[in-house]
Image (cartoon, rainbow, N blue to C red; front, side, top):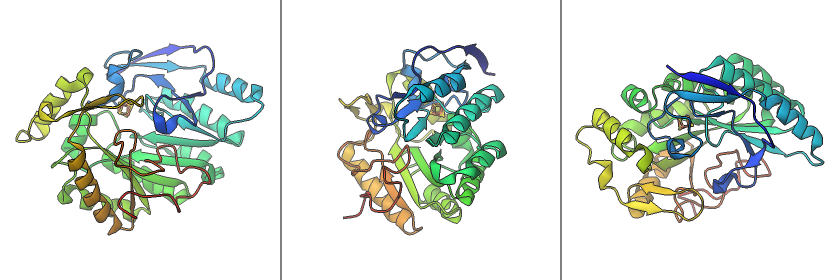
Length: 315
Ligand code: SF4
């Protein structure tokens, strides 16, 4: 059960994130905390994290965004939802604020980009259908496996619901990518796991995916280790993975080593190409492995076309 607390937010709300790929775009968090409660969520280590099962909703965001747009001499071209939470959590109060805020932005001609593991329902699809070229969706889905979903991200939409969202969004003409993050070595990056997922994505006209591997940080290492024992008792413990530290604002954590990731990304790139899908590697979490253009978490860089950006695994 999730406890929702309503709060009024003060000050500017459209702010750049410290995540390198979001530094040049205003971002907005509808909540602190997230009802999806993923075991691997980095925000568990953030200072504003309200604790497991608690979500703080900023209920005055629509008014604040409207006022901020009115005040700005130059409106932002695009706004990203949400660097530290999920705008489509399955709480009606959260979805209502997301709906109002996105509607205000789109009506003002501002593009909306989002990454979600939630279900995008009919009401949002209707709003997006008025200006599909101004919406950029990334749907987090790393596996079709029910056990992985229920153990690691049981509060999020099911893989089937996420595929349905992808289908509906691409059907509207919204540029929609899938985010395979976190991939778990030898569990969700095997051909047996990836091939059916890629086939489902290709069937729904997904032309690009973003990927990164599982990072383990102290704030959730024990929880994750417990989950991994449930999913795959024979896998080597994540505590054996090497620690990698980054100096660019995205922290670090335990992750399989860089050469191993390089090899596995190349394999994923080759598999994806077979389905007509391009792979973008998250450069924030894989410095030295991704290429310019990164994982396009907030949609393609301007101009808004997926063509012409360097892709992993291609020269
Ligand atoms: S959906 Fe994203 S923000 Fe929400 S718990 Fe999962 S990883 Fe964290």
